[in-house]
Image (cartoon, rainbow, N blue to C red; front, side, top):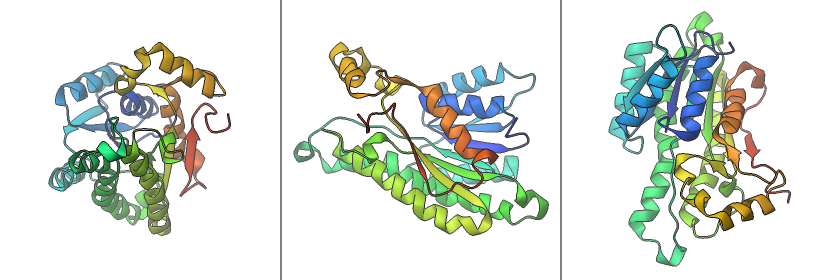
Length: 259
C-alpha cells in the first residue's frame, strides 16, 4: 500500500498503459482520477477499477488535455474535490505514420500537442496544486511525484514518425527541466520510455505478423511488452521507493537499444 491516502491523476487513462497504471495505483491505496477524451472508455475503466474495491476509489474527468481551458477546469475540479494532489501521471499520447516531407502542418501540430503540449499544460496547472500542497505543513512531507510517459522513439528516431519522435524527445527534456524547478519543494519528476507495447493503440500494427517478427528479432527479450509491465515501472517511479530519483528517464524497451 505504497500510495495509501494519496490522490493520483492519470491522463490517457481509458485504456492501455494509462488504465493499467491507474489500476495499479488504486490497488496500492491511491484514489485515482482518470482523465481522457472519451467518456465511455473512462467509465468502463473506472467501473473495472472500482469493482476491485469495497468502496469506490476511481473517478473520471473527461477532458482534452491539449486545450488549456479544459486543463484549467481539471485543476479546479481536483482542488475542489480532493484539495490536494500527490501523484501525476502524464500518459496521454498518440501517433500516426507519415514521411516528414509528406506531413501536413496540421498533423505535425496534432501529434506535438497530444504528446508534448499536453505534458506542459497538465504539469503547469496540476503542478501548481502539488506545489501548494508541498508547502502545507505535515501534509507537505508526503511523497509527491510526476511521471511522464515518453517513448523509445524519443531515444531513437523512428521511420515515418518524425513528429512523434521529436515530441517524445521533448518530453524527456521537459522532464529534466521540470525536475530542476520542483526539486526545491520535494516534488520528483521522472519519465518512463516504453518500447513496443501491446495496447489498443498498437493493436492494428501487431496484427502484422512480419512486423511482430521484426520486433522479436530486434529486441533482446524477443517479444512485445505488456501494458502492465510499463505500469509497474511507472508505479515504482511514482513511489517513495524512488525517493532519490528525479530528472531521470527509465527506458523499458525489452533490450531494443542494446541489440
